[in-house]
Length: 77
Length: 137
Image (cartoon, rainbow over all chains, first blue to last red; front, side, top):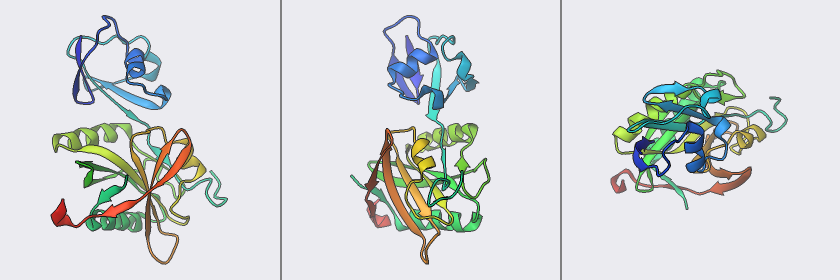
């Protein structure tokens, strides 16, 4: 199956691949902290394990980005 | 390995941090060939002085915009309005992307300080910042 992942073409040998499996293939260590779009639409995190990819899907994923000074020099979170 | 960027990129991050203080600011840096080429200010959806979070919808839009320019996101930055330029416990806890640099802009001292770090599995490594003249980019 041919798909595009973060703008790059990938060929998946497996015939049936979920979003969760794709993140595993991509060696994403914290899939719970990743947002995924499939063909421009957000995939709910609860559906990562049940959303099957299809030929020519365009998948984008990125990590949650957050942080801040809390916890630094006694600044309370 | 150093984070390579121009003085202009440093100055625009500093200006962004000053403009929004005491609210923390955040943004992406994107580049190619090992060099930061563009700065993308992002919305801090927490709008707080001690915390920031990016909006995933805006993140996707910026990542795509960078790609259309032939660039790849290589760093994020955020400000510490009153604390030093080093990762807080919260910064380390929420540093999930092992492939990017984490830049902190501190307004705590007399001068604005900018430092970069790599954070992987909770381990923080300072990363040198190499300032490159624009004509070399």
